[in-house]
Amino acid sequence: MRQLAGPAALFLASAYFVAVHVLGGTIYITLIALRGFWFALAVVFTAFGIWGSILYLVLLQLDAFDQVRGLFSQLTGEKKPGFFARIQLKIFDLVAWIRRKGNGKEFARQLERKVEEAHAGREMISPGWIMAVFMVLSPLFAVPLIRLSFPRERWAAGLMWMWIGTLVEVVTWFLPLYGGASIVVRFLISLFG
Image (cartoon, rainbow, N blue to C red; front, side, top):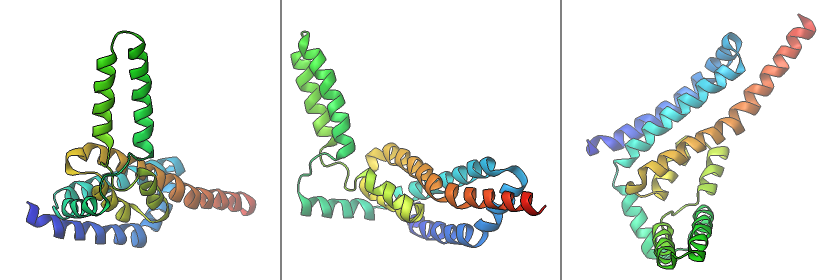
């Protein structure tokens, strides 16, 4: 199965370009004309999400991302927790402080140590940067970054960020482009029709 992962990822990347850039515009405009903008938005979100999930699961089979992760971690050394990990650590700090006020000081220390170990150096690329790649480029470039950022053991977190990125992509790309165009077309039809 792993021998097929490389060719499958190449096939999915080329299928993305053909589907989105060659056929996509005509399909999107047809969907908007037939079923309305919000239906087309839901279809595009679902299609991008499923395609991105399949690409992520195929890339999960490749060992090259884990090897690159290992090389980067050797070069950079230990890394401080990123922005999203720090937010989670602050929430756990609050829980630990509440427990400490009671009689659970040892529990609070164990919880803090466990959370810090779980988040320190785990993500190579911040989810904020990955969302920026979703906004500017596409899932084709962002999904490999997610695979590089999250180790194989944290596949569910990577899949969650892939769906969040798909939502960001659709809201920042499809909504303004086709939503604005559909409003202009409806205005022109009402004006001249």
